[in-house]
Length: 109
Length: 115
Image (cartoon, rainbow over all chains, first blue to last red; front, side, top):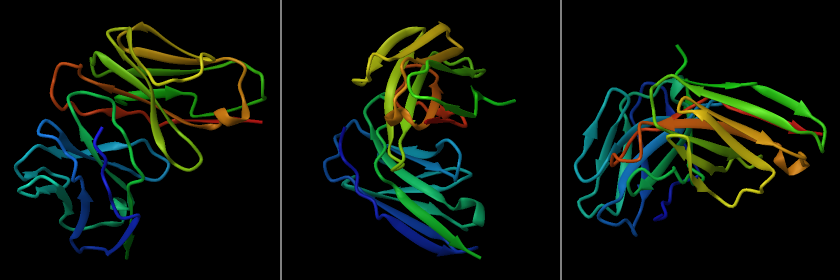
């Protein structure tokens, strides 16, 4: 599986937007970009995924660079409940998820 | 209703014992997985089953034996437990292997501590 690179940690103020970056310069044409997050003491949960176009859902938005070598997960208004480790994962088909270290997001009240 | 459930939530046992962790999903999914999260918080795939058939075994010691009695259940049996088996084990499921990007749903995890 192609590798992704994310910052180890980020901090945000509550109620402000958060942009979580992910680099995946070796992405192939058939790789989907998935984001999962893991809240403290819980199992990972799906956030969003996309292939080429930007995507929105009720949790977040995913902005994908035109060359697909990077993407950004956008939380429009961070809340304390969004404090978690966020994982950017490339998947080719329905393979098991390959988790990296992720980005630990802290949200300050 | 919990989509993916695991029992027990916590398991504390002695080295050398044999233990099982159970997983059930009520989503009607065909594919189930076991992941292990070690003390450094790295999450790694262990096994993948599709329609009760083993699809992936990621070089897990044969002390670990998954069993899928039906599509809704994937249990993990561990023989001769070792200290290094201490971790959080997550079960997950997804619709099937045919789609291009199916979401995986994770259980709450089972924290195994081997003394």
